[in-house]
Length: 167
Length: 463
Image (cartoon, rainbow over all chains, first blue to last red; front, top):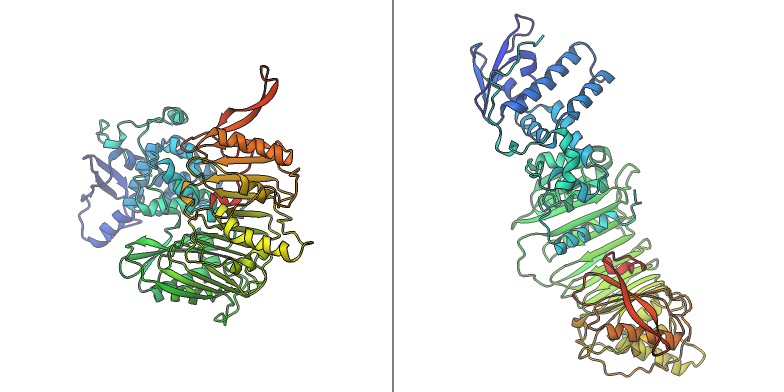
C-alpha cells in the first residue's frame, strides 16, 4: 500500500526498451496500472521494479512530465485554473502527431484517465471542422476506398445530413 | 518535489513506427508531402470511438470517409447482445435515455449482436431526430418471403413521451427480414411523431401495408427486389413519395396530393399490370414540383390514361402544372435515341426549370409498342427551362440533336451539360457560328468534373 505522508518513496518503472525510470510515488500512482500493481502486491519491496512491457521510454518521459505537473497543480489548488490550461496548451504544442499517438497508446495502457481525456480531446480538436482530405493528409491516413466505395459511404450516411444546416 | 525522475539512458531505441517521426514544424508540410505513415488509425477502436464522440455530429459522421478503418466508428457507442426482443428493448431504452445520458457524451449509436451472427446497427442523428436501424451487417441467409404490416398510428404508445426524450421524426429501416419485421413494427408503433419513413433493401419483402398516420409526410421505399404489392392507407398528409425498384401493385386509399414523387421503375414491372390501376397515382402526381419518371411508365401507364381522359372530356387536358424539376429515365435502341416521348412529356410541363435525362441501357426491358406523336396536345413553350443535364448517351450527336429539338419545338436554348457513358467530366454545349455554312452549329467545350456545375443535381439522383 502506498505510504503517503512518510518519507518520499520512489517507484521504479522499467520500459519495453529496457530503461529504468525513478518516479515519485504520487506521480506513479496517477497510473492506474501501477497503482493496482501495488494494491495487489501490498508487501512488495521498496525497490520492486514495475515492468511496463507496452510502453517505451519516450512517451513515458512525456507522460511523467504531464502527470508531475498535474499532481503539483492539484497540490497547489490550481486544478482547473488558467495555469493548467496554459501548461496543457504548451505541452501539446510541442508534440507531433506521431508523439501524440504514442502518448495516447501509453496513457491508455497505463490507464491515466485525466491525461487520456486531454489527449483524445486534442485529437478531436485536430479533426474538428476539417475537410476529409485535410484530415487524411494531416494524420497520414491512407484512403483505401475506391471512388465507388467512397461514394457508397457518402450515400450511406446521406440520411444523417439531410435537413441539417450547413456549417 | 519530484526532481529525481530522469531517464537513465538517453540513447533509447526508437519504436518501429517512430522511425519517421516528425517535429512539430513539419506537420504543416505533411499535407503537401502525403508520405507520412498513418499515425492514428492504429489506435484501438475504443479510443477512436471516444475521439469521434467528442466531435460535433457532422464532423463525427464525416470521419467515416477517411478510410475503411474509420467507417462506421462514429456510431459504435454502446454494445449489446441478445435476441431481437432484447434489441428492441435496448433501442427503446437508448432513445429514452438519449437526452439524459447520451447527448452529453455524444453517443450516437448502439451495436446489438443478434443470434445467427447478425448485427443490428442503430444510429441517431440528434440534430434532426432521425433514427437509423440497419440489419444488413452479418450473415445474409436466403431470404424467406414475408408480408409486413406497419402501423404508424402509435397505438402502442401508452406513455406520453416527455419533452426531454429523443423523439423520432424520421426513421430509416435497412434490410429488415421476416425474422425482424415484427419486432420493428412493435418499435415503430411507439413513434407517434414520425414524419418520414424510408424502407430499403428488405430482401424477401413481398407485400407491404403501411397504415400511415396523419403526420407522415415523406415515404420512401428503395430496392426491395421481391416487393409485389404495396398498400398505403390514411396517408392524408403525404407530400413526398419516392420509390425505386420493380413496379409493384400499388393501392392508396386516399387521393394523394404530392409535391415530390420519384417513380423509378426503370427495372420494369414486377407483375402484369393493367394501366387503370395507375389512376390514383397519376392524380397524386399532377401537382408535383419534383418528379422522376421512366419512359416506359409514361408510355404504358400514363399516356393511355391521359388519352382516355382527354377523349372523354375535351376541355380537360392533363398536365404537370407545377413541375419544376424533372428526371427522365430513358433508353436507347440499337444506340439510337428517340426523343419523341420526352418531347411529348415536356409539352405537359409548362413551368419546367431543369431537365435531367439519364440513358440507362438496362431500362429497356419493357419495349415500346405505343407510338406517341410529338404533335400531342400541349404547350409549345418552355420559357422557364434554364438547364438540361444529359447522362449516359452513347453518342454526342444524340445530345446535340436533342438540344436542336428543344429549340425547334419550344424555341428554348437552355444551358446543356452532358456526360456520356464512361466519361468522368461534364461537357457544356456551346453554339458556334459556322462561316462556311453561314449558320449556327453546336459543339461541346469546357470540361468540368464538378457535378453541380451550371446545373444543380436533381434531388432524386443522389438517393
